Every structure is written in structure tokens, then in C-alpha cells.
Image (cartoon, rainbow, N blue to C red; front, side, top):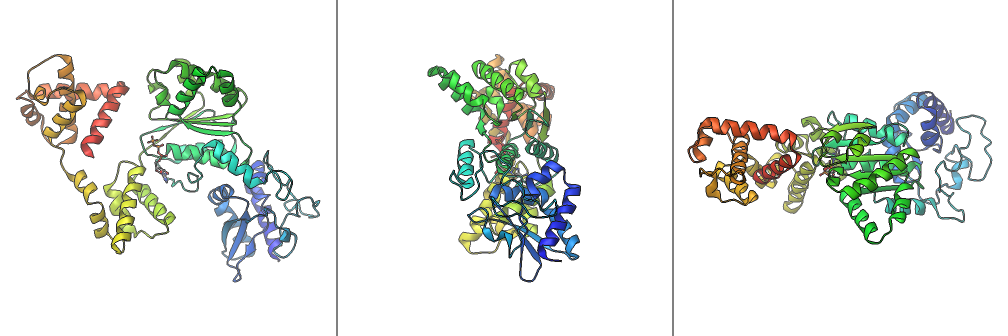
Length: 482
Ligand SMILES: Nc1ncnc2c1ncn2[C@@H]1O[C@H](COP(=O)(O)OP(=O)(O)OP(=O)(O)O)[C@@H](O)[C@H]1O
């Protein structure tokens, strides 16, 4: 069997397991791979890095499996971004492309092998044509979209913490505007919400280089509304936002209390949903918990699919570290990855920071990466983490934060402006130290342990209901732990 025949058979097999639309969009346009000399690796040429990411992450395993089955031995499948011109003429001979050169009618007998349209995506031009090259179209669209091409499905590590959100995002990328609309992703800081959002955008851009995509942070949207207001340019603003195919807005909790922004966003939302453009939103909390948000918007946010991203568990943290090291072209010994993952637990952004420190340390000191090197590189971080937060420190930090005197932490004064920060400090003392209630009471001017218990319960309950308090507590906790 020739290489071309084996590829055709592979495609035929894939066509039975991959839904028609996806097959037509992703597999059918591929030319037959070129093979390494020893026949162990098949290299598929793809037109750009977006397609490369997507094909590798979504179909790589299936193609490998199918091609191995067809040739009767395990083979590796690799992808390579094709150099321009996008469709080299040698495809009809030599490396046995499935597709005839652009403009040549298909003469392949097999349906899998029949020539696809030069491109399924709107706005794309065949290379060598008189219009803009596909690369230029993509580069322009990428710039306009403000997408970061590094944040793709390919570079996103999957685990229990994000598997639902990722699955939903993949659905959306494959069926924009038709599966879950809007897709609302929520979770704590640095857990990959932004990453997932960009991944959808990048995947869609790979499929449709002409797609009108825009990513922006909620605050930027607020500024644009303000600017449109000042310039009396709402028509233009509307025309732009209402014309998008995919709108990605990050951290929508920042719309809180901004009535005009919410109103404009509501119109854009309605217009986009009606014309089946996709909307993806992220937030630090689920829609019903959003503060100072128009109820019409809250219910719209919840009308598609709402998914959470949780903090990654240990194994996922290890996997993320290994993957990030790999991307930096360094090998991280697994024991070092475990060591870091056990000690840096809060979020992915912090994991990345820790890894960066270790790699920089290794580079500058000329040493290999080991646990002892990691301990040295992360000395500050680890000692800070292990350092017990002291009650005195809590009292000082909380007093500074609420602009009261530290002495008021021990005083008997009762006005709310003082009593409340004091209760907050007691709550944090219970949360962040190992001190008992009576010990804490003692350190707060000799108060009874029931007073401390009351404060701990009260603040604990209120933080689940009051977003602002919760945020203040987050800031205080971060400051104290940092
Ligand atoms: N599962 C993951 N695999 C690989 N990298 C990840 C993963 N999750 C997050 N990251 C990386 O961690 C960093 C922080 O992620 P991201 O900015 O998406 O977080 P976020 O949830 O949007 O946080 P914030 O609320 O602060 O905006 C990014 O560099 C992102 O690429």
C-alpha cells in the first residue's frame, strides 16, 4: 500500500468516527502526510499554528490510532506548519497529496480523497491569488481580536478542576452560537478562565480566519462605553459590538454598579444572541451572586451554560508544571514538580511564578534542577508560607486597611467603624493562626472567648453573602500570607 493509499484509508476510517461537520472542517482538508525515512513518523502539514494546536489536541490521538491500524504498526503523527506558499504544487505527486493543486478539478475516485474547497472559512483567499494571503487575513484578525495565540486548548492542561469547563468550551468552539450561549465561566483568580476563553477564540479563528472576534476585559468595555458617551458615538459603538461573531468579556463582575455599561451590554447581548453570535463571559462568581447587576442581565447570563473552574488538585498541578517546563524546553524532574506542587497550592499563576524562579535560579547558578535547588530558589516563598501569621500582624494589617488605630483592636470602644474591623481581625486570627478562642480573646484586650466566637461566626456567615466583604477579606488574607 502506498503512503497515499494508507492516508486515504485512515481518512475513511476517521470519517466513521468523527461527526461529518468536524470531519469536513478538520480532516478532509489535510494533505497526505510526508513520512520520515525510517517510516516511523508521519508529518501532516497544516496551514497555521492555530490549526496545528487544534488538530493536535483534538484529533492527534485519533489520527495516530487510525493510521497505525491502517499501516499495521505503531506510528507517530506529527504536525508541522506549512511554509508559504500555503499549498505547494508537489502535493499532486511525490508526497502524494490528497488534494489537487488549487484550481485543478478533483480527479480522485475516492470520496474521502475528493478535493475539498480551497478553504471553508470566509474571508480566506487561496495562496498565490491576488487578494490578501490567508496568513495576512489571520494576522489582521488576530490583532483585531486581541487574542493571545499562546492561550490555546493545546497549552491548557486538563484535570478534574477544569474538565467540565473545557468540555463546554470545546463544544462552543466547534458549534459557536449554537450549543451553549452564553457560556459563563466562573472561578477564583489565576485558575485559567481567561486562558479557556482565548482558547475558544483561537480555535474559532483557526477555523474561520475571517471571523469577527473580540476579547476584552470588562473594565475596557466600561471605558469604551464612557468614550462613546463623551463622543456621542453610540451608533458606531453599537455597530461594532453588534456585528461580532464572538464576544469574549473577562471579569464581568466589574460591571457592578455601572448602569449605562450594563444597559449597553444588554443591547449588545440581545443583538448577538439573536443573530446567533457566540458570547463567553467570565467572572469570579456565578451569575446570581453578582452584586449590583441588573436582574435582566443576571438572568441572561444564566440562560446558556454556567460552569465553574476549581483550583487544580495535586496531580493536575504537577502536570501543569511539567507541561510549562516542557514549553520552556527544560526538563523538570518529576520529584521537583511534586515538591513545588505540594508547596504552591493556591492557583496556576503562582505555580508559573514558582517555576520561573526555579528555572532562572538554575540558569544563573549553572546547576541542575533538583529539590534542593528548588528549596533555595523558593526560599522566600516557602518561608513566608510556613511563617505563622501572628495575631499582632493581623491586628496591624486590618487596622491599616480600615484606617483605624491599632490600639482600637484592644480597646473597649464600640462604634461600628471600630467594632467591625475588630471582629474581622478576630475572624482572621481564628482562620490564619492556630490560636484558641480564649487565646485570641486575651490578645484582643482580654475579651471573653464567646465574644471571639460570635465575631468568627458573624463574619464567616456574612462573607458568604456580602461580595464586598468577601473581597476585602481576600485582599487581607493575601496580604497577610504574602
Ligand atoms: N489548566 C491550565 N493549564 C495550563 N496553564 C494554565 C491552566 N490554568 C491556568 N493556566 C495559566 O495560568 C495563568 C493564569 O490563568 P488565567 O489568566 O487564565 O486565570 P484567570 O482565571 O483568568 O484569573 P483572573 O481571575 O486573575 O483573571 C495563565 O498563564 C494561564 O495560561
